Amino acid sequence: MPVGSIPGVPNIPPATYARFKATLPALWAIKQRAAKWQQARSAGVDMIVLHDTESLPHGNFDLCVKYFADPVAFGDKKKSIHYLIGRDNGEIVAMVPEDRQAYHVGDPYNDRSIGIEMYKKKIDHGDFTEWQYSAVAQLVCDIRLRWGLPQSAVTSHDALSVPKTDPRNFNWVSFEARVKALFLRLRLVDPSLNL
Image (cartoon, rainbow, N blue to C red; front, top):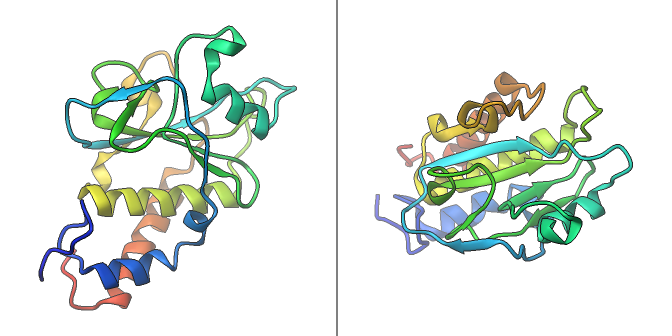
């Protein structure tokens, strides 16, 4: 199978990739809001790190977007994220380009990872929403395709940074089943693919 002209999409013709991406509605909803704190990468991407925001009780998604645009303006330290996913349908914001590093997990991981935050209040010990599971699965599937990453490249913040505990109560089995189903959908789009 020839390598397509889409950077980072190995062995997938551009038309196939375009048809598949059209089946990922969460990606149609992505809005842009630039984060102040970001820098160039010195390496490629080999991991995706999932987080939850642990937002304050009086917060909301719009305030969270403003916070990640510049936490220093809120009296916090420099931090940023590549993507922020809210709890409600259509809430997804790209904040740092994937080819640049965000300040989301610490060294040496920032330089080699893409970070995804899912909005959740610190007092909320319940589950993530259906929209969040659907959106993060679609986003992770797309990132994995474009960067040529295996499922084992997807990890949690708490696996890399003690004493972090996020994403709290995340159903990894359900998430991984959703991602697997998306790769099966890609094979339906083009049965000749060997993924």
